[in-house]
Image (cartoon, rainbow, N blue to C red):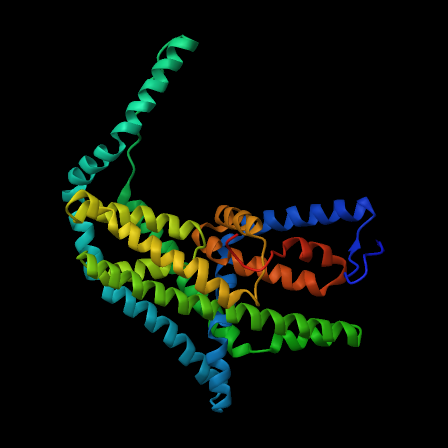
Length: 367
């Protein structure tokens, strides 16, 4: 490992010169990713429990100051999380069921309105295909194969069973993580050979806890405000069940970029299904986009600029990668995992160049 002289005022970053080291590091990375993909049913509850522990860490610290026993504090934190989830599910079961029953009846209306909007696009697509058939020649494209029947009841039961199993394991692991406290950190410090290594491990752990906990708490608070603003906007437009749409906006905002894009399509479909005249049907999407623009481009970056400066291109890549690896939970965890990677790289000298590469300018998102 050699280092080059940096210009005055800039930190010297070690760059690996031995190609075998880079090659072995790449092989280790791909092997680790393959193991994480295969073992996602085991690793995902553990990762979710770890990040939920960071989310409730401020509350645990407060209960520690109140001198509550750790088991009691852990039970209270777990009960609070489960109470919030069960309470939301109970409140939303009625409006969600109402929309589920209403959707089959409203599909013809939705298709008619979508046809009005998409008819010019379909016309251009048919003209393009016709021109292509004239230029290229040959046979007309074969009709698509008939879709195979799907046992929706079996698929629903399998999905519910998988979700319930992951939910139980996540909260079980979270409970024991809360009880354990700093045990794993103390054991890791004890096995470090030198005082410098011990201090580095403590520094990394404290920085990860402070930054990621602050990020999760800040994002949760901002998502609550986004949900409230969206629900008020839907109530102002006269859209039925504004509480449902407030919770939908709250949940979607946990997934950067992909969540808001899905929300735009959802609110456009809901507006098309519920509001008259046609121009007003676009207003739920417009209100949602305005709320998200204010939150995503002004408020949240201002609050997180000092704590997170990640490269937005790498954020997109991380979202795509973790969504492919672990689905929607992976997309939710993508930004915190990338932030933890940067924290570790910044404090481990051989990885300093990688940490500098992950770093963005001043904001998590935006120009």
